[in-house]
Image (cartoon, rainbow, N blue to C red; front, side):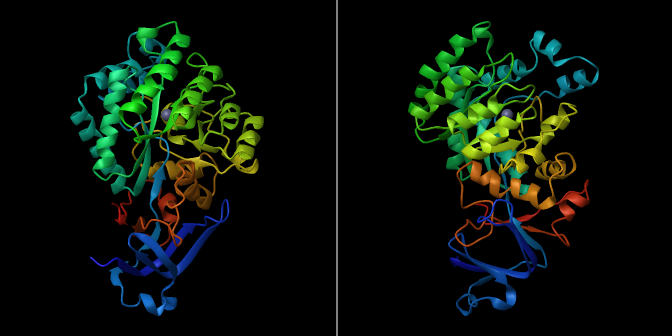
Length: 403
Ligand SMILES: [Zn+2]
């Protein structure tokens, strides 16, 4: 196949502008040239440079081109599901009651500990295929349902295999996702084992597979000091910190992320204004997860507008996981970004592409400018705004160059 391809007959092209925090570009009757899987030229069809006129043509069929979505926060791999628990919650049983009866994250931990690497890979492929069909071209994916060394190792091995099979993902180590029953009542000891023993062991077993480390800093789970310990250990191993922070109450998670120079602080429903300013100054990406707020039936969504005003480059993600967000639908996230976080369409779209990619250090994803990977989504719409406006509608884009 020719390395030079030209997409024409596009009704339009819509992309965030990587040179500005929130700028976007729209080109009507657009064309887009791809050289060896990277974008080489973008502009109006009647201005295609002569050198590109002999390139292999791809018919845009009157559709709109946008960058594919990037999902920068998923818990992709876990065994079982928690649909029964979901219904028990609807019947009025509280999460604390479920957890006391051995349910909640422990149920997922048990199912994940029983899963083989081959089973985890099959589960991962099926979920990645669903995301890809809906326009997601790259994700971040965490370990964290093993809560013991060997299962965390199997999760990492499964992620390595998914990468080997060509799926585009960045892996985050997260053994400190919750306190396992083996360490009940002794979070200090668990954190010490994760930081001093498991993280070095896991990075040693699978060099280069994980790029990030993460920890759940929350009241009743792990403290900011615990978080610091895990992230500092990770950083010594070459892992960049991310952080679950300020989800159910203010714990200083955003401030800690800024102090640690983390790539992101995620959730942030109860982020302080000091935390917002600290994140903006330190270049930490706040990653907001509105489908989790919805799924948990919580009233208060994260203060996206205040973060944008504070100078933060907000990103949006799914938080796909079995307990608090069983969602593999990027358009639901986009719609919640607009309808609940009060972001404009342009902001929400930028948050799910350019800013999501930036939080993963992927400068060549999330926009359609020369140099970017040619992972182009082609949507059958009159304008990309329709993706939010027709709010129950399913849109399945064609992805050019998914591999
Ligand atoms: Zn999460």
